[in-house]
Structures are given as structure tokens and as C-alpha cells.
Amino acid sequence: MSPAVPHGVVVGQPVLTISSASAKPKPTEPLPTGWTRGLMKEIERANNSFPVRYVIVDNSGSMNMPDGRRLVAASDGAIHPVSATRWAELGDTVSELAKVTSALNAETHFHLLNPSAEGQFFVLNIQDTAITARAGAPCDIDKLRRVMQTACEYSTPLTEAVQLVADCVKPSEATLRAAGKRAVVIIATDGLPNDAKSFLNAMTILQRLPVWVIVRLCTNDESVVSYWSDLDKQLEMPLEVLDDVEGEAREAHLCNPWLVCPPALHLARTIGIKDKLYDLIDEQPLAPSQVKQLIERLLGGRSEGFEGGEGGESGLAEPELEPELFLRQVRQLVASSPSVYNPVTKRMGPWIDMRALERFLARRRHKGSSGDLCMGAADEIRKATSNFCTIS
Image 1 (cartoon, rainbow, N blue to C red):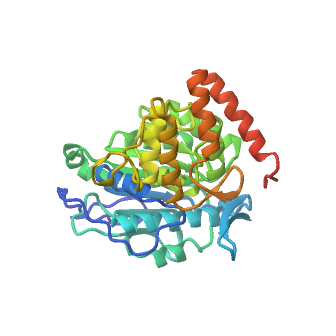
Image 2: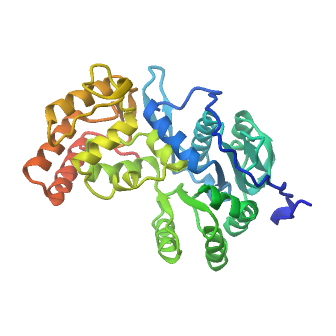
Image 3: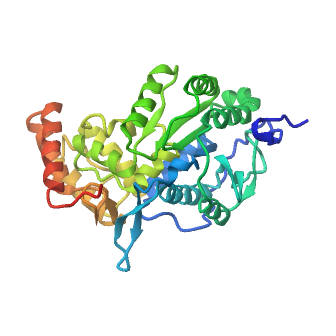
């Protein structure tokens, strides 16, 4: 018998087996702008550990606030930020998330906080071998786009939404643990739960299951940001709390000014890349060996003319030993990678700022102080943004 769950939705009984063979990527639509082969491989690897995702989508009334930002392509192909509602901004994120998970053929569940004219619970890329239970009906990307055009109403019942996801994952808890796999739970919201105490209890229960929780904030409201930061400290397991695209890029720029953090990287982190290297980019200057590792991962680690490496795989030189060779190889990778939108300068450009990378590595060699590196980065971000008008 199928177990009953909140909202009167019936969850289908999951098949408590996990196929040992990973589903092959089956692209159904072009990937979002700026995605590289390397970044796609990172998501593919993550999908082996996190084969299913639940996206809690906040469609409460506050999402109608017009302080959001959409990135829109002009007739010349350049991307520019334009004012929008928070709901419209989140709609773009959901659409691009759907494209990537469809390319991976990865089952993804979308749960609206409140019912809409198109429904409330949806499942994209349904697999024959279910890993966890389902609360919604099958849908496609076009259906999701229509869902994200419905009206935003009512309050923020996050407690009930988290409880429902926990009910979907719990029947497969033992099987997921035995396989060393987890479900990713993405909470995309701009607000606070209706009841903070019950929500804390629901989050505690959820995090005792084999899940990894990512919070994607759709607001810069300081009280909301503080709430989620404080909640992270109260829980047994840490949360991955992500700001909007520009906020995350600016934080990373302060410590690693050579790295452009375009929307593609932000989306990948939202979908779920569980690696400490990505957490560090906005926390501290990376060591030269970490710079090498991150560039190989992001840009695919392959370029014609590389010296060494099997089958053309990256033979990126160690930047501390052969800095000139390393920089030459990185330039090759950058040249073969797509241009991306830089959230700091608000211009199109390469994934890697080569001049900033040269200065970054030179300071590392000659000074070796993380304090000097961060101070230099702060100077660079002020210089980079001095000639641009920030939209607020």
C-alpha cells in the first residue's frame, strides 16, 4: 500500500534497489550558456553519488517582490542583467537546472510550497528503477516552464515541504546508505518558514537521512540571510547556503580574483557538487596546486599541444615549478572555452582572468601570505568595478 503524506498526496512505493550502472547522459536540449565539458563532467561525477534531487520551490507571495535579476541575451549574444521579480529570476534557475539534469537523465523532483494552477509536485526524467518515493506526476521541461509562470500566493510552509521530502527519502534510507549514495535537497526560498521551531525539528529529521541540503537564497534581505546562517549553526549537519550569482561571485573574487564565477558555476553548485575545493573559492586564496586542480576540473583539463598526459588528458604543469608553461597551457584551455558572463564586471569574457592569475601566482611566489593575497584581491575588485554602475 502506498503511504500517505502531507497535502493529501500519495507517494508511490519506491523500488529499493539501485542500479550499479549509471545512466548515460542523454542530452535533450542545448546546455545553458557558458557550460564547459569539464563542468559537465563534474556534474556527471556528482550524479553518481547523488542520483536524485528534490527541489523545494518557494512560490509564496513575497516572491513577487521586484528586486530580482534576470540575465538576458541581447541581439548580439551578449548577456546583460535586467530587473525582474524574484519569481522570474528563480524561474530561469529552475529552467536551466532542468536542462542540465535532463542532459544527465537524472531524476529530479520539484515541490512547490503552495499549489498552483498547473499543480504542486512534478518529477522530471523519471527512471525505471526508482531510488526514492515520488510525490508528483511525470513532467517535461515545457511543463516546468509553465509552472514557473503561475502566480505566487500565500505563505511559506517550509516545514511541511521538508517533511514531505523526508517521507519520500525515508523508505530508501537503508539502501541509499548501503550504496554510499544520497539525495540532494535544494531549498530555493526568499523568506523564513511560517514556524521557526517546527522547521528546525523538520530539518533535524531530514538531515538524519542520507541527504545533502543546499539552500539557494532568492533575496539579499539581511534578516533572511542571518536566519539561514544561524540555522546552519543549530543543525547537526552543515547546510550549503548559496547567495545569488552576483553575491557569490563577489565573495570569490575577494580571495581568488583570477576566477570568474559565471552563472554556469553557480548553477552547478546549486545542483550539487560535493567537493571542498568549491567551498574554498570564496573562503581563502587557493594554493597553486589547488588553482591547477580547479582549472583542470572546470575547463576540461585538455588542450592541443599539451606536453604529457594520456590520450590528450591534461598535463598541466605545476604552477610553482613551471609557471610559464602552466600559464601557457591555461591560455590554451581558456581559448577553447566559451565566453561567459562576469557577474562582477557585468561583461562577457573568459572563464579565467589571465592577468589576474599571473599576478595572483606571482604574489604567492614572492610573498606567500594569504593576507597579502586577499588584500590584493580586494584592491582588484574595487578597480574592476570602479567603472561600472551597480544595479540596485
